[in-house]
Length: 170
Image (cartoon, rainbow, N blue to C red; front, side, top):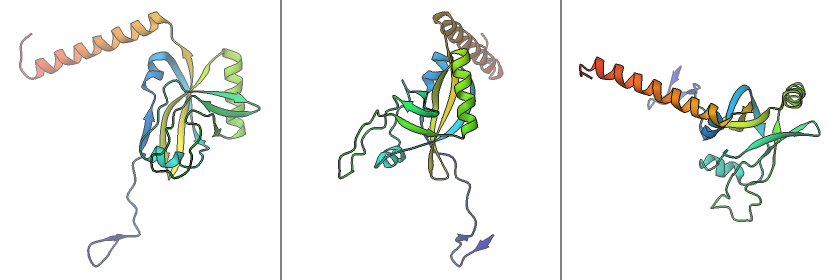
């Protein structure tokens, strides 16, 4: 590592954490998530600046395979407030960038077993916008209730253990 005159670091980059723009927390509640992939996303105009400002929502978003390409639908990227000219389509469909083999594999799984392609996380990696998509099978109402009950039970046991470690009696 080379240190400059005033204590500056030259030639050494600090590893940047991947800034997460949006998470679809509802996806884990609505779907049994399976295999996932990282995909690039084609953006227009000021959408990148709106994402860098941390403004996006993946709730209600899904992806479809159309003509051997994957398109992301229903993802909300609002207009960038400081843009000078007209921004179009905050919920327009956007193309996802994946390898042909990955697209074919996803298409096969969706067609064979009736899965849904769900966006899970939207983030930046090396300055480029990426979206993590996963294959999901819709949960039934009782599955959701079971998951909530299980989560509540684990929280209660963790609280009880924490109280015991602190010396409190039940």
